[in-house]
Image 1 (spheres, rainbow over the protein chains, first blue to last red):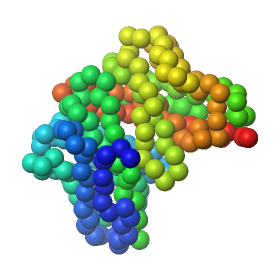
Image 2: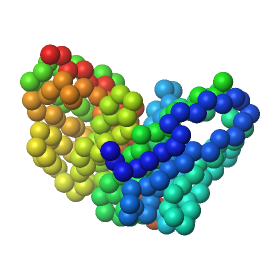
Image 3: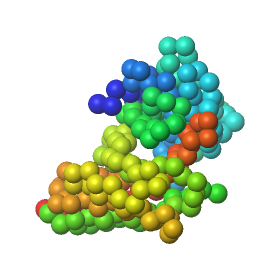
Image 4: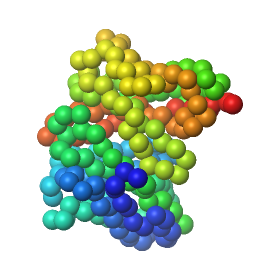
Length: 115
Length: 112
């Protein structure tokens, strides 16, 4: 158990809908990262927040947005869902904003299926 | 752009050594990582190496880095069936935030 929790574990929805994925980092970690893992794209970095502020952005679509709240949990919002958004979404956390070895601890993931 | 490449499959016999190779393109990467993913689970950080090091050993794991050729390898000594998993190579760099680029993953099969 990495100490990172993600809810829900599974999510099934229809095209065009909007969903919210939630992540709670390990106690003491200030950074949260979001990743998408799909068969065709592999594991892609989406976005990083550190202590409530966006710090790094990867291949995140405009239909997707994220935020980190004062209690440090984070939410990833996916809207106007398409079939191709079906994937495993992982959250990870680390202590720092990225300085040092930046060991990241991954949650178990949320499996999103868009029908 | 940045890219990380690794072979997709490796099959070894139990007790043998496994060597998983990776090449990367971003010469400014500060750290290089190896992660393990077991079926239905998230990624687990196995080990990492700082870009100014050539080698790092951690119990059964040995990481070799050839910075000139941008080549990274992970050697697992005395491979066990419990080592069967997908192994991801990744590179990362700190520029106020941290962006990690992952390879496609190497699926390791360990035959008893």
